[in-house]
Image (cartoon, rainbow, N blue to C red; front, side, top):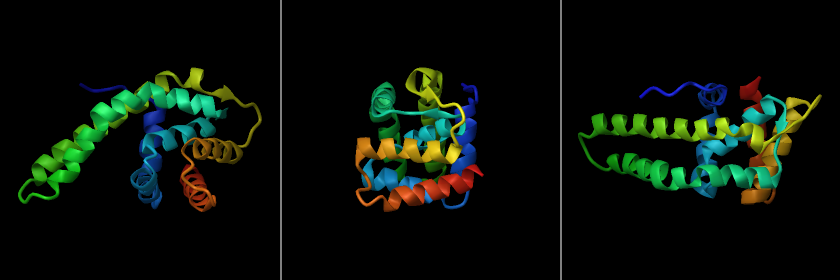
Length: 162
């Protein structure tokens, strides 16, 4: 089944492939359990002049949490486990594609609800909104007490976003 490529999916796919982006986002996901898609979602919202409150992020996470926990995470574990077995490269690639498709579905859920999950900000600079949205995400997850990683994430996303 081919899912429609939403603007959020296209943005996420484009940004994620830029140099240095996947590494830092995966680091946040693995170390602090922050969903890469949620980071890309808050960045995309900034790029279209939309801001988030803590309640908005919590609502967004509620929308996708069951999907993430029951579908994405188990598939990710299977994909990672396949690395432990020889001669399973073909299965690894199939499971990786399935994982990407499930992440695309998560982004579709977020995209379908983004108006309800954010507020329009007229005249705000994208970088200011990016910083604001990332700070709110940090408040929810408290992944960066010293704001060092947050600054790195903002910088790499700002560069990737142009």
